[in-house]
Every structure is written in C-alpha cells, then in structure tokens.
Image (tube, rainbow, N blue to C red; front, side):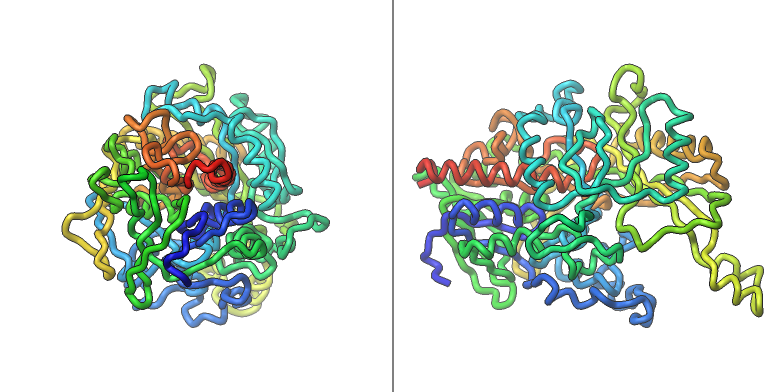
Length: 567
C-alpha cells in the first residue's frame, strides 16, 4: 500500500457504523481506506463455530479457568463470552482500562466488530426522544428531529432487513418491516391480558429485529433466518445483518474500498494552516510499525469510547485538549442503558403446546411512562421498555424428585413447564461529570494511554430502576403467573453494551463536539457517527439510529467533497 496516496476518505472501524460508512462512501465513488484494529474476519470463512453443537465442548460451552482470566471483564455479561463465541470478544489482559468507578466495557476487536454479536433489536427514535433534553433542561438540545432522520431509517431498514409489527405508536415509530416473527402461545395470552387489564397504553409486541424473514425478498449474498439462534457465532446464511455479511461486501463490490485490518488508529492528524484533518496515525498491531495515512475526509466509527479516546489523543497546538475540544465537552456525558433487572415467573398450563425452532428474538414492551400527563411518574425523568421471552424449560428441575428409573426416562423425553422472564432497559441521563479521560499514568501494550472511566448511575436512574421492577411484577401478577419475583443483578454502566456519548451532537462548538451533520464543529472534514455523538440515550437499542445517522452523514460528506469543500 502506498502511504503517500491520498484517499478520498478514511473510515476508522468496521462495526455497525463503519460498515455503513464504507458502503455509502464507496458507492458514491470515493476511494476509501477502511481501518480495523483487530484481525480479518471473512463472512462464513472465519466463523469457526457456526455449526457446533453443545456436546462439542467439554465444559458445555463454559469458559475454562484460563479463559476466565483472559475475559475477566467481558464475562461480567454472564451470557457471554462462551467457548463458541470468545474469539469475537477482546482479551481483557491485552486491552486494559482504568475503572475509577466500575464500568463494564464489553468489546469485539475484529473486522465486523460487535455487528457479529449484537442483539439485533432495531427500534426507531421518535421526537419524544429528540426533544427530551430541551423539554427537561438536561444536557444539550439535539439539533435534529425525527423528520430529519426518518428517510434514513427507511433506507437502512430496507437494506438490512428488519422484521416487526406496525403499531402506530408515537413513542416508537413504525418502519419498513419484513414479516414479523410469531409470539408463542404464552406470550399471545400475555399480550391479551395486558391489553385487557391496563389502560395506560402498555402493550406486548414481537421484537423488531434485523433478521430476514421474507423468503421472497432479495438480499445480495444473504438468505432468510433459519431459527437456529446461533447468531453470535456468525451466521453462514446471512440471516441477520452484520457488516461482514452485508455492508462490507457491498463496499468491496464497488472496487473503491481498501480494507486494512490490524491497524490501531490512535490519532487524527490536524493541519493548523488548512484547519482541516489530513489523515490518521496508525500502529500496526502485528509489527508495531507506525504509519500515517492521508485522506480528504475521515469517518470515526471505532465504537463510542474508542472514538472518544482517539479524539482525546488527537492533540495539536490548536487543540491541546483533544480534537475539536474547545468546549471541554469531549469525554463528558457518557451513557448506557439500565440492564440486569426485571422479573421472572412460572406459567401454569399450556403443556400441550410448544414452539417451532429457536426464535432469535423475544417480545418487546415499548415505553409507557412519562409520555404525557396521564403517564407521568414522580421522582424521575424519561422512561423504559422491556425485552423478554416465554419458553419451556427442560427436565432437569424434576431430577431431585424422580431420582432414577421409569419416571426419570419418561421425564427426559418431555419438555418442562413454561416460564417467562423479562429484562428492563431504561434511559440513562447525560451528566457532564460522567466522563472518560486519558489516564496520565497507565498505558497499554502499544504505549497508548488507557481510558479512565468515572461514570455512575445517579438518583434518577436508581428511582427508575425501582419502577422497572415494580411495573413488570404488576403485569405478571395481572396475567396470573405464579411465583412472580423481581430481580436486580450487580452491574455497572456499560453492561447494557449500549455505551454512548462523549462527543455529543449539538448546536454550537461552545457546548458540543459534533454538529447536526455529524461533523466536528471546528474540523468539518472529520465525521463521528458511532455512539460517541449521542446527546441522550432514549431507552431503545441504539444501533439502528447509529446506522441511519451514518448513512446520512456519508451522503453529506460525499456532497461536500463533490462541491470541493474539503480539497
């Protein structure tokens, strides 16, 4: 690769946002260098566990003692990493950071990033979300509204394939949907009971998820979901959306993409004369070679916290505190979602019913609090939603009573009773003192400063968490479920794996880092389109919104380049 070559664009990162940036920029004719700090992962070819069965693992998929050390932070998630997915999670010993306060930073450093392991839940924001900061007097006002993003939501949904049910809700706008997956019998009755017993607008629907469900749909290189529920291993059918199966192959087909893995971007180079960025500095992860690549426009999509880290490290005479950071907003307003709390219950009956396949989805309960005067709650701002599922357990719970013999043999061949469980996802307010900085003392193996996290839940979050537990218990009891119990597991911010903020979007460089087009206010040829630009968090999974903003920003950048603005 010619290091003196000046690319039209550089994209840093290959996850949800980076893949979309690469696709859109290359399809607009821009010669684009795509940099990924982790190794190459080719669709299908590099999914080593995609067809494995549970009995293929001596520890039934659990991590060995040695691996538990390597993934000592990643395994805070509990359900991941496992033996069949660990290669898509970072080795924490190689990638340390400083926890001034507990922060659960769950990462995947490889081509495709966390698009290989994401939960695939795909929900639009509404004006209730975009207007919330202004109405509540919290953080900074978003310089965009739903109408600005709606066409880009359309574009993204049609391209990635999102299955779901149209509801006509103001708080959760409908989209361009593939056929919805089906609720099972218990979930259907829960839906009916909820509609009958509550009059505040709460409802049950199937999750909106980035899975192709229409057998007649045409997606280049991708097929329909096979209901295997092995998504996080990489799907050989391309049934769910990932950068590897979709956007990166599309970018490659243009002939305009150069993809370079094992490339750790640590700094954006700024020219004091032109007042523009000229490129990025890179450390080769395998050779430790230091390289500089040049481009007319740069898209920072390294994942929220990593992008903030790169901006903080991008110091110059003009920007001694990080690129574009005259406001001291850089690194502030770090958010996530509430997670690891909800309720479980047992369900009587339905023993003559089951379900087909392993549905890679659950039901969803959209936000129903603090939407208007009728649903207003005292003590906290914003709201929450729920994700859950009902299923039949296995026979193992009966062993204590059955012991052995004929009864045990018969039990082994039958599914257990029905149970239901729900997890709440609540909004996290953007506090300026929830921040990430560069450690002045701790460095990683490449000599780069570690990120230091000083982020915590505050009173608003704790009060909301109590309501999250209380309301789902009310719903389960109203449905007649048995042994209803709320739960709340220890966690820190980050564990929802929806970390965001740190380079917030706003109206002015005096209070924010990014403008309405995702450009750094003071360095307009640098775009930030991953979670770093978020000024508030809503309570829905954020990836669809990242993709929509990225597509919008990439098209804006292409127009600016064509107009000679970055020459």
